[in-house]
Length: 553
Image (tube, rainbow, N blue to C red; front, side, top):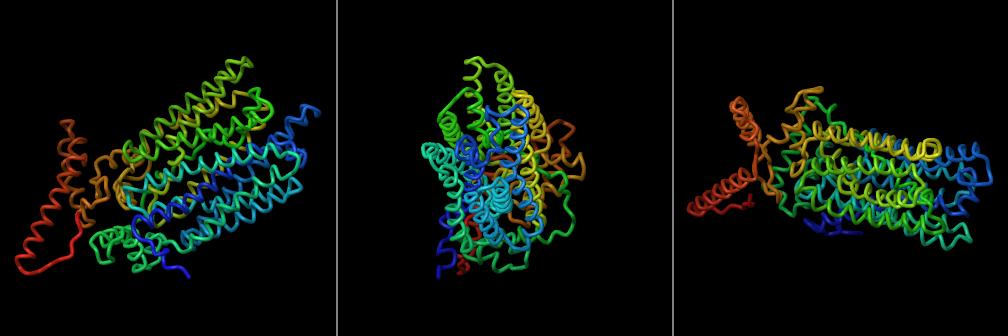
């Protein structure tokens, strides 16, 4: 019916993959934000009175119970996401990336329909759990599919764009909720926002199966020719080109590696920064700061819009600044923001309420720049091919279980300890700073196979976890900043050994680190040498009457 990959190759094909992956992240963001506004709508609370924790006509004890019910109902989605991610551990490598996305999206359609048609709290919670099951599978798979079908120099930018699309999805949900606030004479004010997510699902289901499967997964399944065809289509190269051959060999070598890699220290710190406290309960928090009527929903929508805009600089910065610096910047700013929110939240003074409103925006900005896209990009970059699907699912599941914990405890926490809830997250964000500095290696401009090599060269246990940051600094790069080949796969080990010996011999004089670094100057020299060698070979071939098919290094 359609041409293979819709007849697309090269950059156009990359854009098509990114569009579908991005649509899934729009869906994910929409699902995260949609409950925030609905919780303040009277028809929704009339339908589910057990969640109405602000009802002034009931006793304090009943309000506490209702806070618990509200936490259970809202967080049940995150619990479903956790189990969906766990299921990916067992299904991810069996089904492949595309089929896993198709399955997850289909499940989400069922869950969304159940939520939109709910008349009892139990019915509503079941719908949220089912929606979460599908989303958990998708969030474990889509970043991996995106990372495995793009070149190293584009990977960070593309996945960070998808991170920004999460915030755009949240923003859309907030504005839909705000618009439906003015239609509160009918239950459509909350049923329509719940059903609207199906639109995103249908777009994904219509296109994903005619886009390329991950070449890494194809190699893992022994489908070498299919893998080469995908690599060639994505790079817009001939299947017989040097570029395709080098990429294929690098993937094949990683997939064939039989020695169990030391990946225990690759586990990614789950995101428990407190962002979901704001995302899921934004309108409720603003109502608690003294706002009434439509203002909490309007402020939530404006917060979401600012959140999206703040995520855009990270798209440009992720490769230029690197992953580590962005995460350090974000964690430090998040810690300070939470500490300030804890301080001003204990006062009913108008000035303190204004500061609280401002720093809800500030916290979102720090998270958007430092951690939003990184939550999905980084785990897919640091796990080895043979366990990438289950490891990414494990990372995502840990993320979701902590998100569930945050969303679950937020209503009763505010009911019992008030603004001191923010202190918990200030401490957690403070811990993130040394964790990133000592244990998180830089992955910018590295191919996925290069990261495997880096982790394989360090030891097991705590010392290996400490060494990996240094190893990432001294490991020679295979590609330059534009994705051009610097070192062919067969040359990497030899160059790595030479640089390792150079670093060891100069270590006593304090110059080992600099001697081992593969700098931008070294990169330019390597490119010049490659081009000179290519020119000499071309000249020799012309003089001998031969003509070769060469690809610029």
